[in-house]
Length: 292
Image (tube, rainbow, N blue to C red):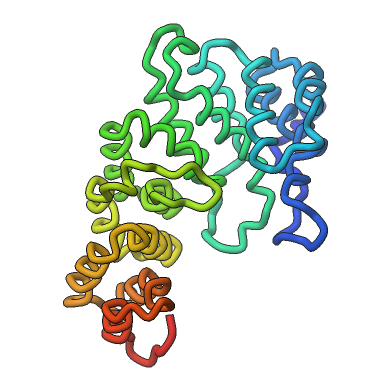
């Protein structure tokens, strides 16, 4: 019997790091579009790859990386089944295996920016889902996407429009075995996340997200703890006294890992010579460590 060949799911070739003279937008060029069509067609044989590629490339050239993600998401929405749950399920089925590391992941993972944009743009719309609530389908998609890239951008519309349900789900994910999922819980809720829309409600009152930071402050993964520190740093820009109070409390029983979180969280107010920040950073120096 002749063997059956199988063309597997794949990622486009991409550099390990940002290259001088090569804008990030080129990560979502013709090769990525072809690869996206290939992967989706493996999950959904009826997918019109040619029509998608034509629509995807039309108007792509002048767009930056984030707008390319949105543009490709719109092309996917046009070419996938109109029912959102069916469409996003196909995208989930088209994903390559989850990441098995938390560093040196390279830039190929930006291939999943259109998938993230798809959930952000369409994942809250009942009308596009036959009148049914698309929340669970969107949460499943974001859980799987963050294990391959990050769902920190697409989780934010849910935090703005469905804060209670979304925070409850994220709080439950703080116990997930995958550090990429745990990191999302902190990173996705940052009020001033770079590249992303801000969350005004959390800027005004960060209290709803503090239980997540409490759960993750002693996480075994530095990847997650760094996000907690950066999140506290965001809060400190609007509520420095609150962050100083939190760090003071954490410092009372902190090991060296948590002391690093405290130092890293306070680095910006310390650069401004805030005396409370300087005092707390000094108290958070770990054994044999003099710098954050």
